[in-house]
Image 1 (tube, helix red, strand yellow):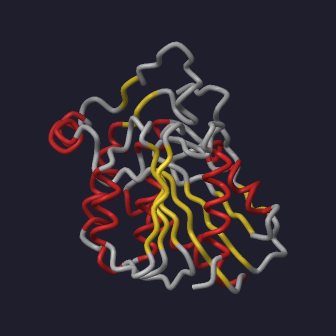
Image 2: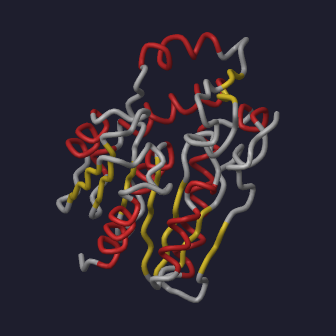
Length: 249
């Protein structure tokens, strides 16, 4: 399946000499194209920034559809373990589905900080995803994304939805939702009111259910779902992440 230029097959490990590690996880059907700007920013501010492509991402839609949600969990487990073995401090930043995976990691790993961005734990179209997708994905494996005006404006991955993988995303959300009370590390939640893929419901659901005593929110207005892309809010978002990571527990 073809892809377009907002597509990055590479995984990144920047500023390896730093002992302050940050694992940065991208969203569903996307690539490190959407996380690299933040990785570069943090690496220049003293952090070791690791931004990998998740299994089934940065490859093909068919490859994505072949993965189970456990593959994503196992992958981030290993990446965080590798980073923690080489760094004195370890934090995780997740965007969209990457935020769900970050929350999962925080349920059992004693990380320094957790930053969840544009979380999609509750789907915007729950009827379609929770009821139709489990049935439809068995015979319809992918569906073309409905591009408007500029096809490169909103997406940084596949030009089709991997529907079988979307069903795994649904299972992932069910699995992680039940464990949120085990999240105890300092947490920053970032959300844009201009986000068309993640409802504000996600903010309340996560913040109300995690057990972290130190919880902060940053709500911006102009950024899209892809919070690390260029927008009027980008500087505010990046500086907030940097400040939160450096704040003393």
